Image 1 (tube, rainbow, N blue to C red):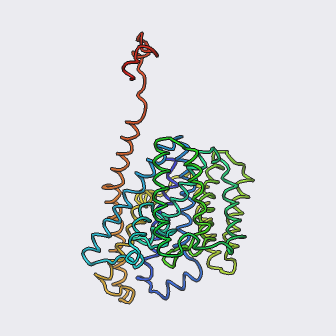
Image 2 (image 1 turned 30 degrees about the horizontal axis):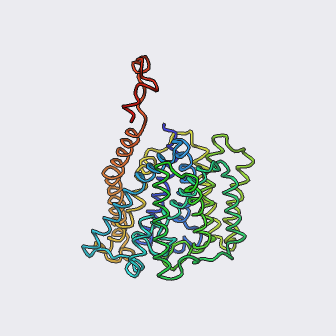
Image 3 (image 1 turned 90 degrees about the vertical axis):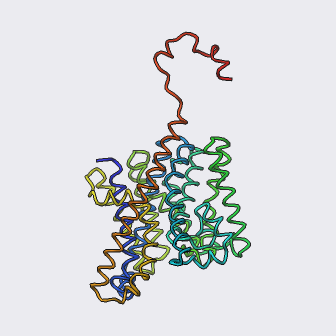
Length: 415
């Protein structure tokens, strides 16, 4: 069993939950779907689990590599290929007349294009090509902030960041502006351009390992985006800056469990920080029982898997975990195509709905598996080649023993 199997299993569980959540109105009907949501939002709970897993994995990846260069190359090769493949697939189907571009992208194409370069459409205020792209916005902000903290060697204080962000979200959240930086179409284009320049500057210089303190400070400043621009337009899925900060706190809560597991933070401090995040998440919407149950469901699911992390995980879940990224991005495209095959599937007789649901699941899983094999795995092999080519060559015993291989004799070759 691999040490990361429990994380794959969690990703797989979260991904299939999102898929089934989006499918449920077509199977059980919109009325029954909304009735369940009045008690618990399983789709949002799954997203919170995704964020907790990212909070655990990203610092682990960064600190294992010990290099901002290797971290960013790994992130780029991990997330961009499937992301771009999803956009390309959507564009192909839209060109065939089977899908339609989101209205906010048609109205603000320039801002939309810029926002998608950085994977931050939600904070720019335009709808993602596929709506689930909104979560990638907060993933990218988290990467930039964590890389900045690492550059400044401030990355170990995760408990303070998780609790601090959560408390700011709870106590100051109602007073934070939601569209300070993107209140108009012009502002959104400018913000999109600034984010492209800033993000490319950070990635380029940190990959080249230059000016890391300057770019680290710039990366940490990205935490201000969800703090003052969390809901710039109605096209944004996140409903307020308060909610945006809370999502970052949830990711840092995942980091707290990573540090707790590796003895970098004590049990008391870890549990206190996690309790503050959970309490703040509940406190922001304490009058909504469905939200409280959603938060508790996500927390219980994550902690249950965490405490079982040394146990064997179901192979079906670990497989789903491996294809979870492509499945998460692309299942909505399959869902959008359903009405072309079965008109108004939610109103069809039960046998038709069940057959439609099974066909949908089979196609979505097959598409994700194909994307994983054709897009994600080659990108990982490319990353391995890049890292291998960039690594210093080991010195052989012959080279160590040979006279004249020291500082002076190879000067001409070095020049």
